[in-house]
Length: 261
Image 1: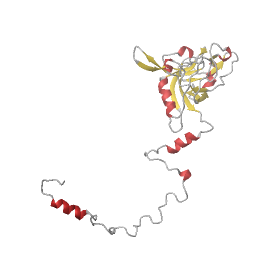
Image 2: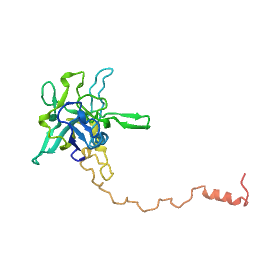
Image 3: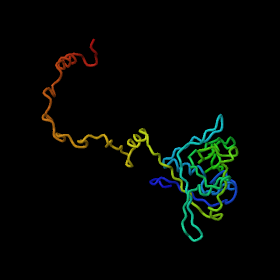
Image 4: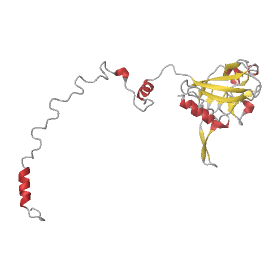
């Protein structure tokens, strides 16, 4: 991933050029029969990378009690590869997916739905569901890492997709997927304040420069000068309290080893 430029790169290869799709990309060894690209990385690592560069996940889509599309940060997905002549190619991933009815390329973005974790009772451990195949989906799944923000699946024939064969290079062509979170047009005030309060790389807190007064950072006029009486003892310094002698005298009258009554 590139933390400065905010994108994640996922290596993989073309695994399908013809056929109906439920995914655009899946981890290798899962659902290559219905995905255009199989990736070398499990989905959970890609998920972690997106979080590290500021993307927000979820919620995943739901069907019950009513349909709600997936949410999360919009993610631009691009494919980079070299053709037979060694020329570097780069296209939007949507160009490799088409509507079955119209033959046109996919025109919806993907959102970072985030998938979900389930408990494997036998192994007594949690597992990330998108590792099972649903990395970048074109049919809706509650387990999708990236999903379309519209209803898509067997119940909606208008949104059934297939591989856009003419646009896809030969099988087993190595590719890189570049995932870039789309930056929001507006940043809310809480995010601005969080950015202000964030510690700098050396661990110190950034000063609120925007609210500083014109003389902020300048020493006070008398800074560094001692006060007029600095170093002089206080007038009564060293003198015992008025009743100190009396107390000592009374104490001296007491026999050693006895206490006063």
